[in-house]
Image (cartoon, rainbow, N blue to C red; front, side, top):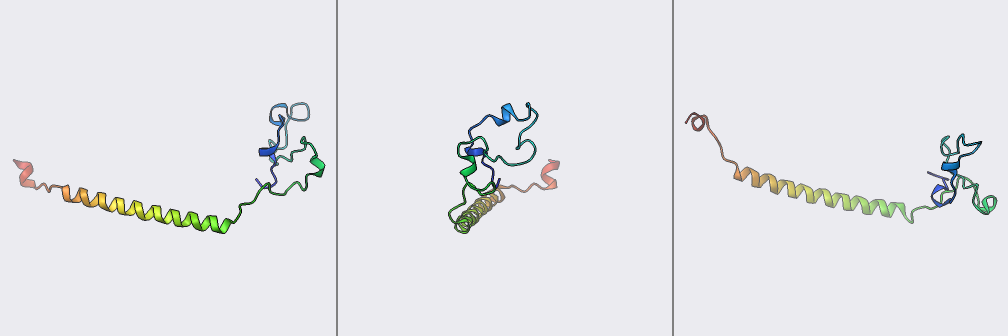
Length: 99
């Protein structure tokens, strides 16, 4: 979640809750601001992402290549399996069943 500081915040907000145990920001649908952390007011904006992937286009392109390669490999494996099943198949005629 953009702006959520929950993964790096060390507090028991989910257990203790606020307002006499009524709720807490995440339970009401808002991301964790990390307001109980040291230097909260000096840590920057509320809605800045904690991290950004180094190069999302490069990662996406690599994932697409790997996915396409896996798809081709599965296709060849299925084609070989289907061919083996087809060659091993015996045809049964009505005359064979009447015997």
